[in-house]
Length: 96
Image (tube, rainbow, N blue to C red):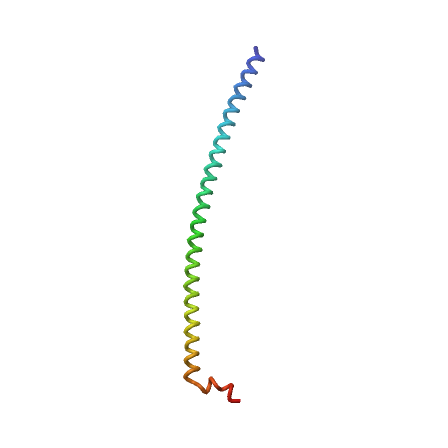
């Protein structure tokens, strides 16, 4: 009788422990999935921001390159005009 009672108690403890374990596993899996989806959302947001930042950097670089080239053309034109307006400087090397 006592032995049967002990077995019944052990069985009920085992059942409750199994149920608790199943519940804990389900909670753990749910938490992991939630964390994974949050991570994926953060990754997507990061990639979107990175793409937008890269596009802005490219746009700024193109504008800077355009300004630089325009400045080069202006200095080249100014030098050409100076050489045309000052023939002595232009032919200085040939006079020797």
